[in-house]
Length: 244
Image (cartoon, rainbow, N blue to C red; front, side, top):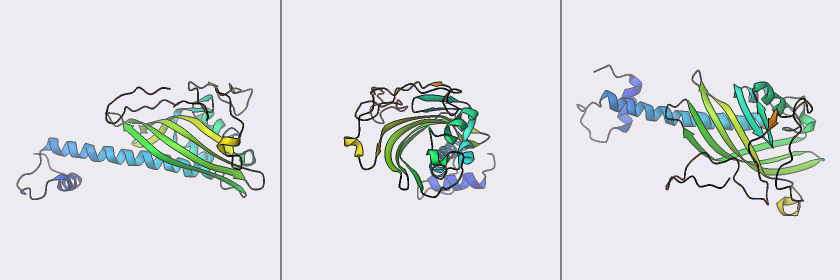
């Protein structure tokens, strides 16, 4: 039997039933299975850490650090537009379609600006080979410029992740706003948005605009929809009958 590494021995000890005789050494196959379980658990934690870091870095306008979380071929769907490749993603995250106009051209915390994005309710699904993953997150945000405006909003992410040289990165991000409203108006007193988001102005006509229209027809409250579509089946029935 091949030598058992210290790590595998620790894994085996953690999973062995209490009272199992010391002589009953687990097989190589069992150790491989246990190591695979631990690796998948570590991957899920790494993806959570990646997205939480994304939220904190975005909050404080660390644009270069946000961009470093994406793969070179990343695609982002945001507010009706699709940004293809890292240069396009940079256009988005540094421009007024993504950050307050007062913060455009600046990096790092800005006085008088609040830009908090709280990520909740993650559902993460790893691929069988452990080299990619899909995940859904809900975002709640409060944003504003002191003495000028205050906004709160919610939305949903459906993201794809890829392991590059052993490190998880974001390879696709789709975000749909559920509602966005001035704080004092709330979601009921504001003017209702159109059922379909208007087609954005594309790059280069808009220097910060998307390359083309998004695949996702995002629906803002009070309109109904679950775009972007949920990637995962019902955890009990296995059904995927979710209306987009």
